[in-house]
Amino acid sequence: MNEDNQSMMGEDDGSTMDDDSRSTVSEGRDTEALIKEEPFRRYVLYCLHLYTPPITLGDVAEQLTVWLENERAEEYRRRRLAVYNALYHDHLPRLCEAGLVRYIQREDLVEFGPVTDRYSDIIVDQLEAEFCELLRAERDAYDRPERADHSNRSPVGPP
Image 1 (cartoon, helix red, strand yellow):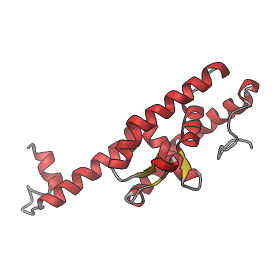
Image 2 (cartoon, one colour):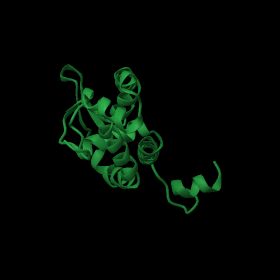
Image 3 (cartoon, one colour):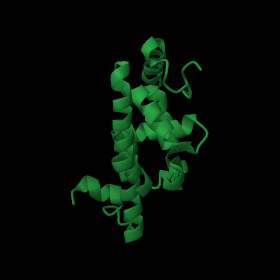
């Protein structure tokens, strides 16, 4: 273990941490990275922050498709399905495992998980940093007449 890691773990100053504390510190860093490094996962948390949870996974996929893509109408539905599948098979399980979200499969609902409060400042800071970009994606999606058929559930776009 290098000196930087030792000082972060509290070992080079004579203090010690038990295995549970080390695990918690590591899990905290892993969870923070999970939020910051992957847009899909971060955007799921934004949806929960902007809407009143629980919300359906379909609505989350709809919103992420608007934020992530700016495609022609004929490509939009196919892309939305791909986003839904990526959320269901990859991103939601990781967010659930970290305790950031809870997915109720029988009802297809997503809501905040038991540890989300610990990371709410990070989520809000990230959302604020990306808000203008997300708002621009909303505007672009709603300004395109061929996209008029998509959900009006947007928290930041026109109804």
